[in-house]
Length: 200
Image (cartoon, rainbow, N blue to C red; front, side):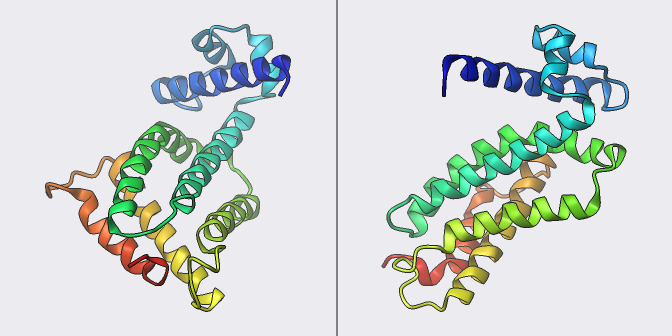
């Protein structure tokens, strides 16, 4: 990446970060591109150079959430040996990333119906992203040692959905947990689902 491209990318991300803050404070409908520019410390023209409007900002935030999620699952796939301890260590890092996504998830949940993102397009993005997560976790035949590929994929999908559901409700939804260690049961569930791929 050239210095110019890197600078452009940094500015784009600063605008997105500012948009999350502004949308959270003023709502998607109440916020203006001027508000976002001010919060980002750039001109309104700079914001428009990256995003024609607020709808495009919301779409970019959705892509960002999918990209972060992919990084999270790629980090698990990069762990040399899966076992309860390594899954727990990975999960501690995953929670940090989910907390990073929480403000974006809040904004997307509130703005989604207003933006009116085409449902078939939204479903397609969801399917493509999740296909990527599943392929990342189920793609190593050596790790899954003799497990039929269809079974490995289903187990990976169920693990992704379990993780996504719990972490979104807990971190973004701020669901109160009464247990001392909310991740302990989640580790059990994920280790069970990925069982055939776990090391002894």
